[in-house]
Image (cartoon, rainbow, N blue to C red; front, side, top):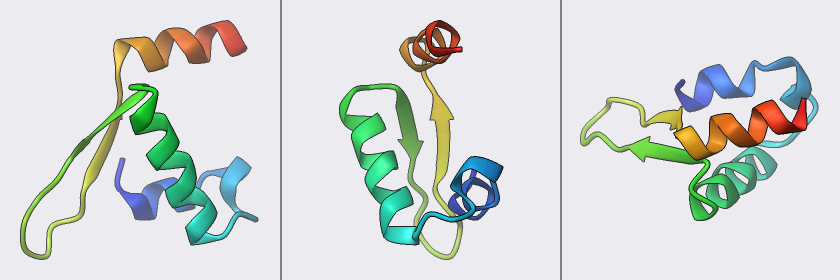
Length: 60
């Protein structure tokens, strides 16, 4: 997902952009997501890792 797609998620609709970026940095730090960075005007892509998917399944 791109940052714009993430901002539109229901559970994040009342969260500031700063708060969402904080969530993303923490998820990267815990290796729950990985970020594919592009140069130029292409947006970064965030995707869940196997560790992140397992954590989400346990949480549900």
